Length: 303
Ligand SMILES: NC(=O)c1ccc[n+]([C@@H]2O[C@H](COP(=O)([O-])OP(=O)(O)OC[C@H]3O[C@@H](n4cnc5c(N)ncnc54)[C@H](OP(=O)(O)O)[C@@H]3O)[C@@H](O)[C@H]2O)c1
Image (cartoon, rainbow, N blue to C red; front, side, top):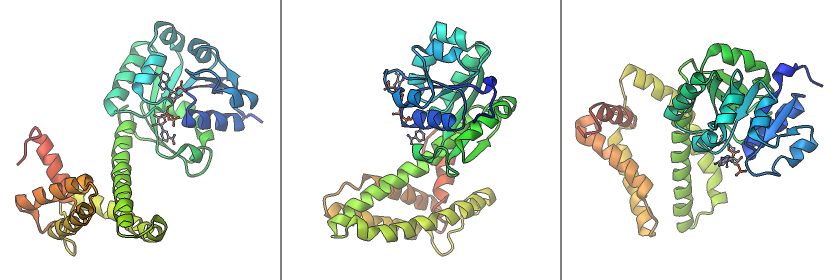
């Protein structure tokens, strides 16, 4: 069974799909685990598997040196943590907050923790609940290196890869935002593509193998794009942004001919047209990132 000491005892606050997966994997690893959830009863199967079900947040916090928080957002995390009696109970313990939210909220929570003598590590989980305990799980952390190192063995029971991104506590949330930016815009594109394809008589099953092929084009683009950005070249050789504008216009027209809202593609096409209008038509599509960044630096006004 356990190779963990009492100090490795972990409390999990929040038993949504992710909190349950985290707590279940800790139990599988033999870690002494205490669980709490706002709505009672969600701990039943975990308790049957050996978890201690706490009747209150204070009781849950008192049971372990390490308190993992995994609720819907930081408003919910604040509602759980930032009550006088809970804050007092957390003093001298460590909170690992795996709740997703913005970098600013992470920094604000870290400041609150520091003010109250609470160790604090912010984290982001980049893979679904089903990945927890498997080699596919991906965890990102930021905050004090020493805190990360101290708790790494027990965090490691969740399987997969664990990366400490640095002491600046907003970094894990910043990576989360950037990576989910890719994910949700891709998902919006996929959902829109399914609607347009179906309107053209193509079933999702028929499209799937080719959709996978399009997805496979992206990973090398991420690496080449990073080099391009670093070098400031934005090479459009073989695929200038003028050609991308034309391709996107075909999607908008086909979509709208079927009465399907093309808002997502219109937004992308608008960005590309703006870049062409600034004289970068021969560059590649990632010149968009450069222009967006430059416009933000001059206060959001358009060049
Ligand atoms: N599920 C995934 O695959 C996945 C993947 C990566 C990251 N994440 C992140 O992990 C976090 C948890 O996600 P989840 O999937 O487990 O479920 P979720 O639906 O995002 O959150 C549900 C949990 O939040 C609690 N909650 C909501 N409002 C609350 C409040 N005001 N006070 C106290 N607790 C509150 C719920 O308690 P009740 O049961 O009482 O409602 C429940 O425990 C989120 O930040 C999510 O973005 C999830």
